[in-house]
Length: 326
Image (cartoon, rainbow, N blue to C red):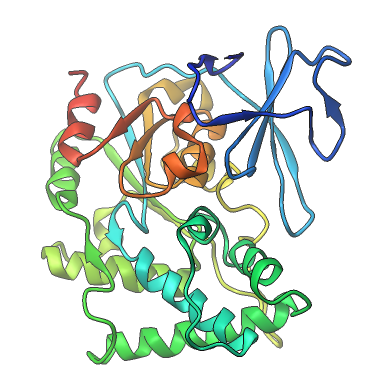
């Protein structure tokens, strides 16, 4: 399989051939379209032409978008590293999946509800609304997204308050193994570091604060060169910020962190890498125009996004070797 912008891909790379894409706008073999493929979870469709490709990021909320697939090549020395939060910097996915299970269980009237392995690519790495819409369609059709979001925020705020009070889930926000050493090495090399998450600020910031406290690193705002979150949730009587319709795998969070937060232009993208453990995350990095380093332990393989990784690493030691050009 050859996809301009990605190159020649072997069989078993995780991408699935499709006859059409973009909500029926493009068809394989028609109007210049050479082939169409998608990640296994269907979140990103790749439409190949003779000399270029487009990516279509769909949405269960009905707001899809097309993006060019830019060729990328790592051009050392690396100037900036963009890092995901949940599952990459902090081990917290289990906590947030449990919050989703509580929410869906209450909606369904089944407090014992637990997700299966097949659900995991769809309940991590995306926005809260995307996760909830998937769960509603599968577990409690007919329930409203608004009701689900209200319950989710209620459970999340209660459990976060319990953790901050020292009574909540133990180890919910533990720093990932080796992440402290990685961050210190990057700083020592003069590399800019940004934290990028699809999570809302009210859930994301306590996570990194807890992890930094465990590491003895002080205030994350003093350490990171840029922190980008999905902002603040919309609620009755108060404004929200953009975040539910442009999360990973859309490129905007990573693009904003690099271009606006770090001041690195698109023409310098070869000196930038992103690190993420989710399929949505590596797609987001790649569509933003940067080299994606996929971390094992997330859902990259299950979601079918391995082909979008410039490197797939088991440990942060592997990441540092790649960044150093070894």
